Amino acid sequence: MGDKDNGLDSGGVSNAQIMHSIGKLVGTVEAMNTNMAAIRGDIQKLDQAATARINRVEDNLSDKIKESSSAINKLIDDLEANVRGKINGLGDRVTALEGEDKKIIEKVAKLSALGGGVGGALAAAAVELIKHIPH
Image 1 (cartoon, rainbow, N blue to C red):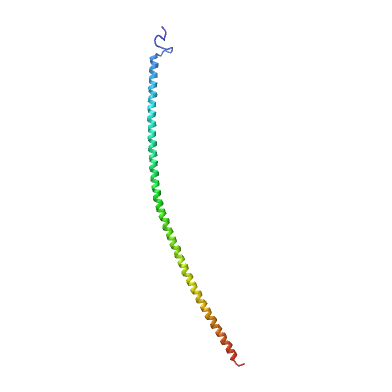
Image 2 (cartoon, rainbow, N blue to C red):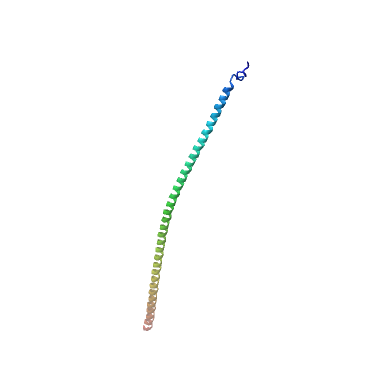
C-alpha cells in the first residue's frame, strides 16, 4: 500500500491535518479581520473625540476673542474721546490766547498813537517856543 492509500501525502502529513491547519488559518484571518474592524472603530471614535475637543477649543477661543475685542474697542473709543477732548481744550486755549494777543496789539497801537500824538505835540510846542525865543 502506498502513502496515498493511508491518507498521507509524500511528506508523511495526513489530509486531515492539512485541512485542520487550513481551518485554523481561516479562523485566524477572520479573527484578524474582526480585530481590524474593532481597531478601525476605535480610531474613528478617537478621531471624533479629537474633532469635538478641537471644536470646543475653537469655540472657547472665539468667545474669548469676541470678549477681548469688545473690551479693546471700548478702550480705543475711550482713548479717542479723551484725546478729542484734549485737542478741543487746546483749540479753546489757542483761541483765548489769540484774543489776548489781539487785545495787547490794540493796547500797543493805542499807546503808540498816544505817544506819537504827545511826541508831535511836544515837537510843535518846542517849535513854538523856539519861534518865540528872542534872538
